[in-house]
Length: 147
Ligand SMILES: [Cu+2]
Image 1 (tube, protein in one colour):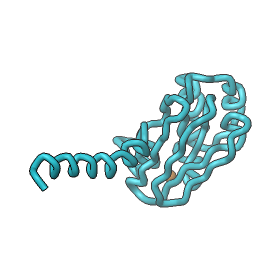
Image 2 (cartoon, rainbow, N blue to C red):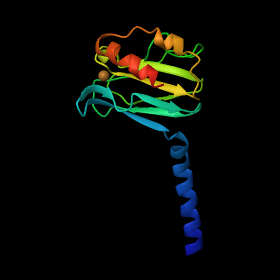
Image 3 (cartoon, rainbow, N blue to C red):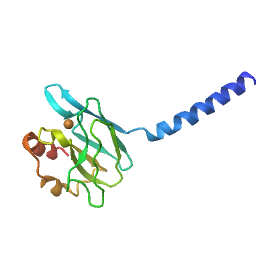
Image 4 (cartoon, rainbow, N blue to C red):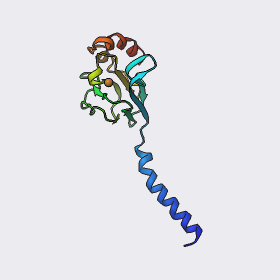
């Protein structure tokens, strides 16, 4: 085998190896954290805006967290989603609208987040009507105003 064919073979191998990774790459990564600046029990980004087809990846940077879509807090027709504790999570958003979620054990400690898909806010009234608890209840209105 000459150098040229070795290079060609290598490039093909690299492409075949990397392509699935590139195709599955998350479009947005959010860290689940015990601490971020002065805040504790928090998602590194509380609001993200994505396009349908985009995947959001929640990294379990610190343990003890998860992602749970809030009942009534996502577009109709979408199935509920709850990730495993302590584990990375990912979700591919295909239906436009607003998605509200919290971390199950820290739902009253302000660990909430929102995803807006395709800039569609048609379910905003349902989001405003959600019942939040404790610290989350305090911070939710301001976040919802920023959607
Ligand atoms: Cu948490």
